[in-house]
Amino acid sequence: MIKQSTAPYAALLLRVSLGIMFLAHVGLKIFVFTVPGFVGYFASLGLPAILAYAVIALELLGGIALILGIYAPLVAIPLALEMLGTIVLVHGANGWLFTNKGGGWEYPAFWTVGLIALFLLGDGAMALKPQRSRA
Image 1: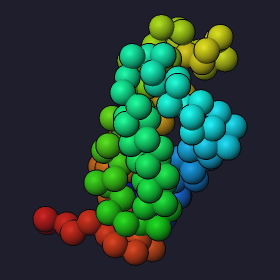
Image 2: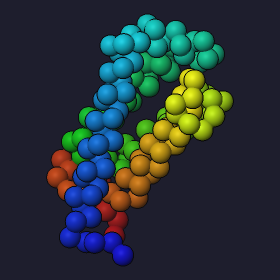
Image 3: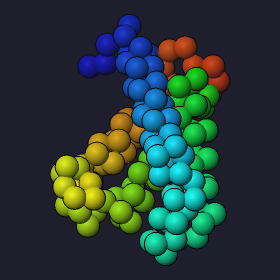
């Protein structure tokens, strides 16, 4: 059973931690790999450069939206789809363990599950712009 008194805080914890992870992830792309380096990596995968910029924007704006609680369940969906894309296009061929050369797909899979759980749970406590409930 769901513990009604603490469930909103569990969703808050999940929402904020996922948001922080996305900010750290996009920071790696911007400050370590650099934007031109990341765009070049996308080109090496046969993907258009504009998609690399879209991923950077999604991770940056999505991470901020999750932390602040701005329509978090809706924001979780495109972020989960992005993570599934990384499994298909990048990490899937490297095996299961993320410690494998090139990083396996366990970490993005777990991240995807967390985002889907957030979508199912809702915004949680202290959301600035909660998604309106249909119930």
